[in-house]
Length: 261
Image: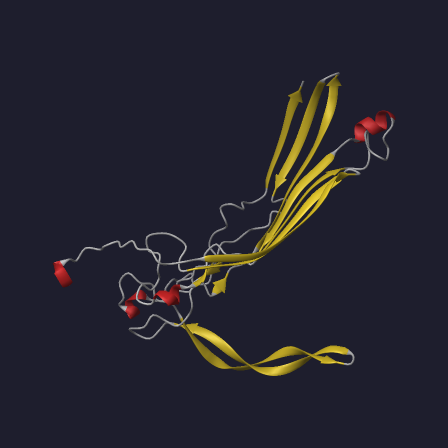
């Protein structure tokens, strides 16, 4: 080794850039007739050379090969939040009189719905083939054959699918002494949808004293939100998702009550 140094060395430098571009749209309905909601949609792309950590670059011998989607990039994000006072019972439009009205309402239903596309990940290869300490070799993409795809062709009656030849691709370990030709973060995991819902009502106990009851459900559909699959081709679990996202747990229910005076 040059200079007789064999210990690992961490080098910090500047010169890398990142960029983020997006289209953002919002639609809001102010509270009226018992309903308000806000919808927000973002179509975006975030690109960088690495997304944090000391081992920022997967290939420090070719800086440009590290440029790709950021680890946290999500192409689509949609959020809907709503407040809906149910239209029956006291203080509503229907069945609002007498004992029936007091029993049936007023109830309020609030919720937040989120749908997002998946985050990218890189398929990595056997590091011993590369013999490149401090770097992360990637998989090789290879043409496995010619298949048939379909594209829409305009006609007088509309669009019809027309078969066209397409190339089928596969992945494999790179050749010895190479980094692999697959780009960083070329694959994407699954997106997820999640709906959190709450139902609550306020009871008048005496004059200014009120009792508020709340029932809340997080991930009400109990939909599993899987993390990205194992991306190392050396792993026996390659391509399998072995865990769920920590910030999107399974369904949770909770009840609560508080007194206001």
